[in-house]
Image (cartoon, rainbow, N blue to C red; front, side):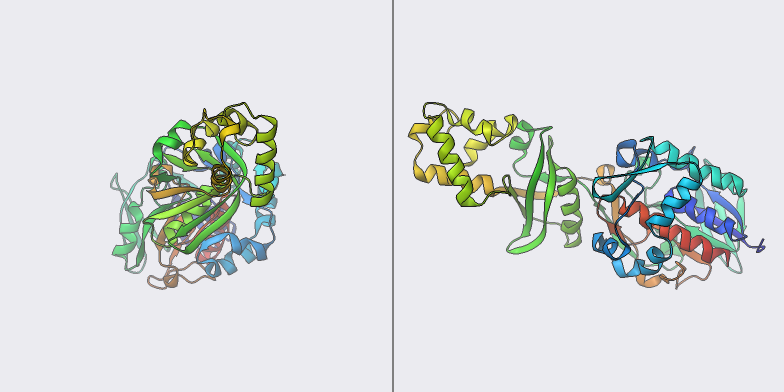
Length: 410
């Protein structure tokens, strides 16, 4: 034992990994968790399956980080996805790889990830304090951590891994940002990221609610400036747009400050305008006496073909044989570029991660130690770092938590 007492605030992914790493390096560790159990947010990640990391090469990993990727070099290179997989396998949590390098438990149960972490903390005698809320933190020679029940913990080092503000019902309500401010840290205003869009065309989206589009592409623009473009899956909801493509786009939208923007959807990215026009012409030739809405069935899924014709300014019941060349061009144009007006993002309740948090310039990237308060370490979503969906954000939590734990143990 180093003789050091390390307190960890937060029993999520970063906090548990930090506690394990500090204990493995000889420290006595107390983990303080406000919920009735650890890993509450992990339980709901990946729709309850927990996409715990991504197998992409380390060099590629940083291209999936939206905010401050360079800050993460030391953390990721010192504890990458391969080492994360080795850890969980060693604790009896068997893993599998799916499309896009996404890693899941073989069982498809996020609870197995939590069990592995709790098992290792138990082996290392980490003192886990559940239902414990931190009321204040002060530092003189050591950290004085006052809990809601009146208990005071005196620790040599403190690791803050309380998350951001996303999914506040899991305990990450941003309350620790105020405490960090009181210790002198600058906080970049937290905003929801990896979150669905609200759109002006709400009624159209409501009519297509539940429709998932695969193999489509989008371009998000602020005026003439492109914010994001991507290819993949999109989902219509009762309020607007969601799905993997939109969630990723939202992080770049928030990065530029939100506000009005336009999303352009290409429903047929595999076809050029000329190829699509030729196909449409062929469909019209073969179905001359049918209504436009019925003919579009070969090009569009049910819910969308009902609302699409009005976008091209044509009635759904208009006979194909009476559609003009100009009208056909309008249909092609909308199939290749269906415009939606973004009015904003949904709230933290629906956000997968938080963008913003502790200013990374105030944290040593090689140790995760605060440059403002000696002995204070910050890990995970509390930092101003966020990434795409696909296991990248949890990898950031494991890597920064690991580095903070090792460093805090000294």
